Length: 165
Image 1: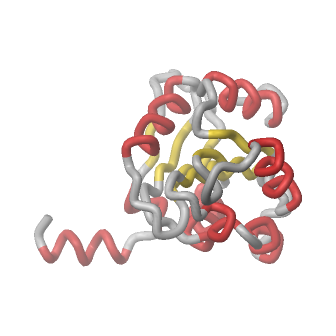
Image 2: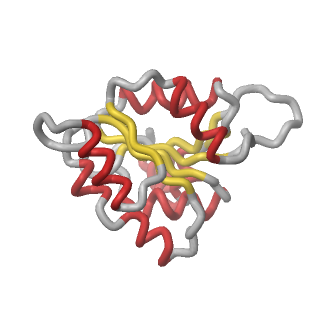
Image 3: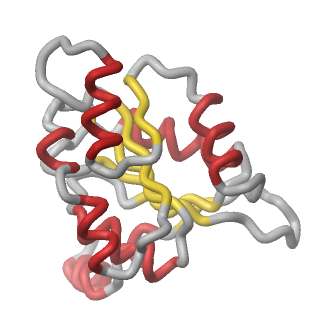
């Protein structure tokens, strides 16, 4: 990337710089979701897999990539009218990085946005039921372990959105 192109990319909003991917669905309106890896986590492979799964399931995916702050997720959701924010973390610090996210969404006017979190969200081996309870207490609507069959989050997202895609 040339210096001029890099500067131009930085001047764009998070949603504009990343773009959105959709499967071909003709003229049917798709539900927009924002996806990314939160905090200082730079694990990109799972992020691309998630993007492909949600695109193939019929969602418009705004993928912010890795090392995404809470405010970057929120900015992108506001700019794109997203109905859900899908947060992943694999490096174990998700519990720290995700704390206060629901409150931040409410402060920014996203009271009703769906918040999903998944991956290796905590350090060490903990019972997933305990991890799920922690994240639900933080305001997340759905929480998934790294071993989840990815058909489940897409199915539950459709259900939580009232059948919309």
